[in-house]
Image 1 (cartoon, helix red, strand yellow):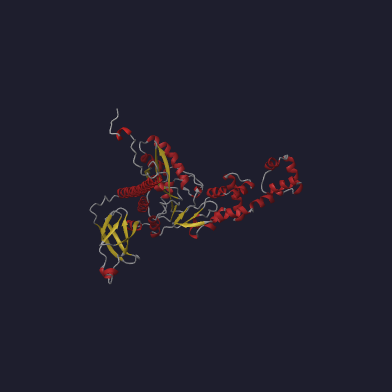
Image 2 (cartoon, rainbow, N blue to C red):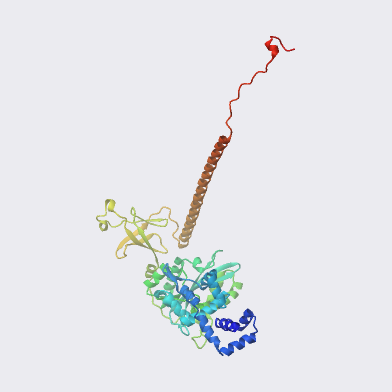
Length: 485
């Protein structure tokens, strides 16, 4: 009867009949009969007991653990939680008793627990995230809406002739029309497009788009760092363009992904007929926009180019666009100069605003500077609270680099590499100095030890005793005054 109790206990924990038979060395038919005798349907109760086990309370607490980092909520991943559980022997045994011996099984059981405790993954995400991030984690209900004038911005990669290219494209959501694109050849160690495209590149991409077509009703982007940069977010807010960010790891919420798939099918053909990747991509996009497509929100095949021609956008002046997408810096005016990286700008702060700040109590004023992304010769200067314009600052650096955006960006990257190299050399020099000091201390300790050892040896040696004078041998012949024969 003890084995029968063990069978029912293991089955309640979620063990299968085969596992119980192998564990207790009992025929499977006997295990099956004992289970049916007690309760014809004990499996559901066993599953409920399994999901209500106390270990799941610990796991859910780890899932709900969150912290703020750079304005975002950071949570623990499922893989990391599973690794932590395996490192503790008591929790590892508990998991094995529940029949969890791999991460795949752990994820499957965890989904069941979350559905039972919270109802869905979405409700769990809303519970452990900040209210500002709720929109990013809400699952769309049913088919996604396709409103006129909504743009999707995303990037994809394509390999050709041993090289990898990144494509940043904009697509109108309702018509499926590819508005424009930007491409760059990736470096060997670049695997993500947020490193291939800088925030200034994306800002210039938006300026060209808005100047050509107008302002969209909404911009839909993902959560890459480049698209979440301050210059991008601030520029879209200045132009009153709503931003919607898609849920992470959910490509189905981005309709542009299907467009990329069809576009790559055309690229596979055009890359065989063109010598350069840029020409092949240009013709592939033109062919995509002019050909018929079957979209699920249209009953008949449509042509994206014709549909997009019926959409009207809000027009805006180019000066407003450049004003929206400007670089923003907070700097201090010292000696009538403002320094931004390696550039020096001359600026005379209004003297009437600094009355009484003389002598030791005088402080360098803080200002807010705005700079056009294509013209680095002037700065628009405001006060610290950005309420009063103070004027313009003029570039006076004698060794100023070219004002081309790409060259300035390359110069900045070079300066960062030099700084990292300099910092690394200083650390190596400091380490060498420490090793040198340790070596000198060891030499000093060794010399002291040798001196002590020498003194000890000398103290252990016996002190030489004075020897009595040797007695001359008695010679009777000398006494008689004779000599030896």
